[in-house]
Length: 245
Image (cartoon, rainbow, N blue to C red):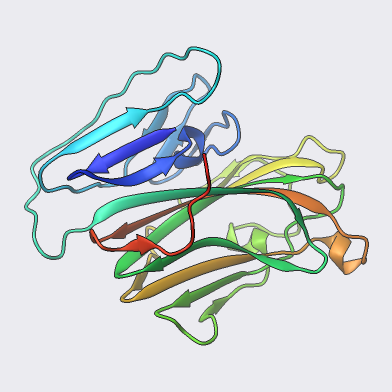
């Protein structure tokens, strides 16, 4: 587990693969802010300002010994009242049933900040297509989401349930299911270098869990693991409980 503190405040608690966009397993890809290669090297290019101190910790929650090395590029930063910390959150839920269709909460925040991306690892226990559910994004306690999408795959930059591995500057699908059809694990990731979402008092992102099984009325079961990334001030906080890692 990657844990990062800035100025004695832990702002990042996230599995390593999920933080770097690889999701479940080692899945090479390259986008504007992150890179993962086949040898296990992972790179992150997000700027992470701090005022006084920074500390990076790797926690091994497994039963095997691991070896890891870390290098950090840093330079002076003039801290002012506009400077924000970088945050990352992760949550995981097993056995989500899509009858009735439900909303999976990626993140709910209170305070002021800038939402800059997310990574989804979804394990589908059915051969049916899993990604019919749209994103629903509400900013500053809107009564109805101002961003209401058309499907999970559209949110991640592709369509028609494509099972091709791809990467691009702002979105990628580094892992696809082993099959048959859509049975197995898919990893989708998106960064918002050009379309980051600012919020003044609150931010909420839900993704509807909706499969073709729901539409055929025979249902499906899925596991969702989601990491989210944003900038915020010291008092910008997660409203809902973080997943236990």
